[in-house]
Image (cartoon, rainbow, N blue to C red; front, side):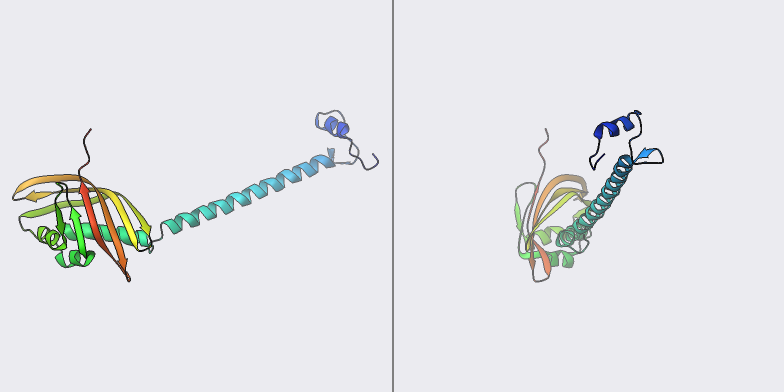
Length: 190
């Protein structure tokens, strides 16, 4: 062979046309190298898949980090809904910034004092106050929350029910988050 590979002989070996020189156990050395190469490629592929899986898990875990700002604000949204339902006025007051303003379904706006007065109204009994489809977008010390809100209850003895979309704006001052603006609207029925 003189140091050169005779590809015709190798091709013949793979198609059953004879065994080229340099064989071992009736398999060509070239085929053993290819098989090792395939095995090496398989090991490399498995290693890469393992690394990608671990990386994806780490990224997902970081996104779901329980102590991250988005998670903190999401928990505060839930705490706010529960405090409203249960008329925990002190807790509500601590969650709302002094400059808080809310726009409700009918377009009226209320300050912090007006919202707290409404929340403490004994003629209103909230039975369900639940959030869904909540998305938190954090930009430095500002967080914007969008989502859906469902509320049922009784007002002056009469049942009511709301299905709203919401946008809340939270600001972080020092180590505490407070809601500074809120907007609730009723989705248009089509």
